[in-house]
Length: 324
Image (tube, rainbow, N blue to C red; front, side):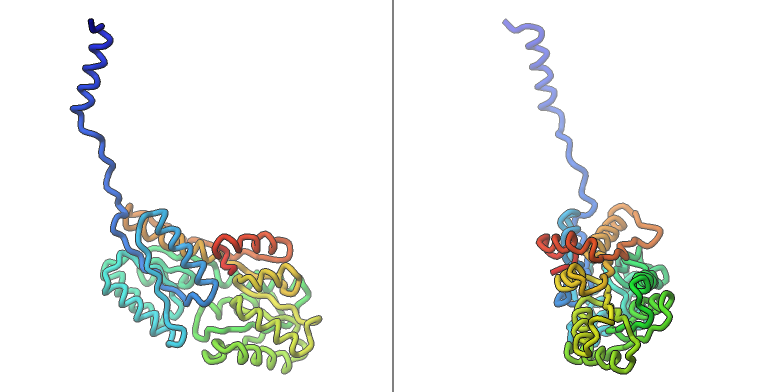
């Protein structure tokens, strides 16, 4: 004999079976493709940008295509070509560095006019609003130079060389300009493209600057690979005990040199976060109409002898710190 409780349970189960199951709302990020346009992966810095972008793609369930200019090509023209190609392929968004505004800005505006969400990453703070980009993700480049100059001055540097390996890039010019605000004398060396891609030529250019001015007691490079060449140049002119070298950006060699006291410090802009946030901001804008109202800062952070070992320990995480 069925009890009232049994009948109530049967009735509830029957009602449940007849009620339509709740369906999850559609994923607003479904079908989104983000083209990330940045530098060649031969540079560990851009390897970290790519890793961050791919992690964001996995977390947000979107597609990311990483595009880089050919190292042998004319960089500004190559970046314009890649932007144009991404738009033609009907990507949802583009996250890119605005390294050569005079060449790139017209093409970026055309992408925005075509309905593509654009986020400027790593380079482009002065122009992100002018070109209609959703946001800028990166660091304050002037502040990078100021901070480096302050730290070098504290170490006793009075007369420095700033090594600019990307002529025509406002980012590099801003870093050297910032350095001048804290040091009494700064000479900027601008490497031609042929020199910047030739380690021997780069080392010779730095050695020549040191030989030309025996009072130089500091060298500031604007990329991790150039720091290692600068240290060799200092050794070649027999001034390792008198010239302090510092740099922007990280690599395994740079971190080991900072840890061992051979390199004064490195200024980190956390490129992994630039790649991650660049994709994340684009997806949030497309999916929900959300956007930052100010630049998204990922640096600068100073890595010196006090914290280099802890940063170096993250090498085994796949280059998240740009430190392969």
